[in-house]
Image (cartoon, rainbow, N blue to C red):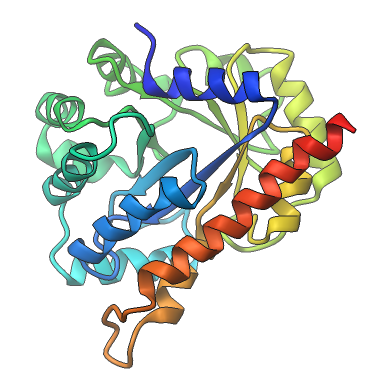
Length: 280
């Protein structure tokens, strides 16, 4: 694969000596137009990489906050095609920030793998995280995605031992996403000492950046994780900020975009402080 926006962004951050803030939001939550406003606001607030959720009716790895975000999006008519439209609209004003689509295989399969990959590449997607496709199914989507110039990002978990890790890493590109806790998203806070040990172990097997997600909700947690990882992912806290800003009918309010961007700014300050502290 040729160099991607993801590669360039992590190289730039390495030169700066700081980890990435990777933000997750759900496409179409609480509605398509508002979610586009949110995504457009993320880089200015401090997001370095943006993960966009592809809403799906049976998100088994997601906790209540992200499940409800996906439900709101589906109720509002969001589809995989409109999610690609969202990326395309974002790209019209930002050609640098990496975009990763995250979700489940069913919507992609329903659209058709080749049709999806071609459309994703054209829209300006840089990478995919498909949580229910194991390495044993790499021929299905991973290898075709890489031929289209899309990074295929794998999840490693606390149960991914040294015997399993090479299979997980074999065709991974872009970065490795370390899931800091067992269970669903947003369900618990990570143990930063154990996370640090896990990141060190993974780095012994790959030159790819290692980012850490699941359970990170505050600037202090982001700073603690960022001291050892190449990036910190925050998702449930951001979709929670969307939910708490909605009116009684579940619709966006004037404070919705600001609620997310303000939290991202706090998290970004934490991530930037992490490496500054380590350098002192």
